[in-house]
Length: 403
Ligand SMILES: Cc1ncc(COP(=O)(O)O)c(C=O)c1O
Image (cartoon, protein in one colour):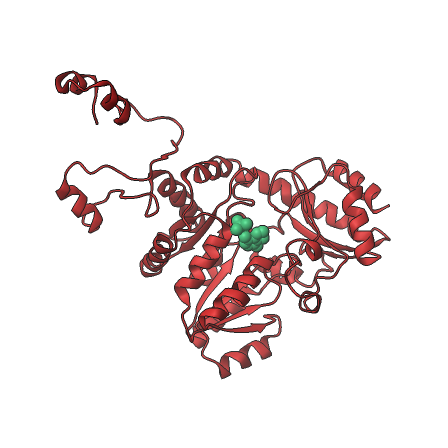
């Protein structure tokens, strides 16, 4: 790096001074993680460059491969995920949750291999599996993991390479029994992966159930502010990490340092936010359950919810997501969406403010109606990402909008 002294001795001309990187003036450490917005990193000499490229010494090459901002944030997420363990975990950040999901699936599956999953996944994941993976010759098997007999029969009859699940699921907030998935891994020697976005590592730690890959859309609760997209894949085997890294490096689904930096800031308040999300969601769910114009409430914290016992056994609290069905189907669901004053209509989740989504006209628009209805995603269903506002204000707003 040139400094004032070099400039003088080299007698650089005006154009050269403009074009050069200049002294970075790093005298001591900044307090807060800097955003390393540099596409490439400098080698002091060719020998050092070769050694870094050959992974014979640590160092950065190119931001699609890794970057100090990404490495710092990934390290923090790995530490959170493996807090119950002696061993280290490995985390890789991606440009979005879909980047994390696709990178994991492209790494674990190939032409002729088989994935076993369930129908009530995030709509984008279902689309990826049905439209892209099938095109590349991956066999897709669907089950309801609650039907243990049927699921076991599928594994008896098919060589399954990867079991992929989401718990709690989007938008029915239904939970998969993670100890059952662990038993299938042991019995049938397949890899297991989970999208843990709704629970987050604060409430559910799938490494306790020997999951190989834990996936996040960090866009959601982990960031919490809704100001950046991001995803993460966390694994506890160096081999899995290396394989994921290779896929990511070549597919280019890398995370921008600025988005990673926003995630880093959001993580500082993450547990405090989660406590409030959970308390508000429980209160709102109980209010909705007692409302005469609400047909059904999906929230695992309610004893009436089909997943209550499973959630109780594997989550430390029930999360900030719920969904409910208003009476009157599509017409009344749309009326409710237009009637709210405080909650916001926005197709995302996990932010500090309460967000609403109507799956039939948004996240599940591209899933055929019969297919989504067969798993319970009906026209009257509304998904709520419960924020950290005052619960009384939320209840008042929902009450007036239901009418
Ligand atoms: C459970 C779940 N996983 C993954 C995703 C995809 O995340 P992203 O939008 O960051 O790609 C979403 C998006 O809503 C989601 O709800």
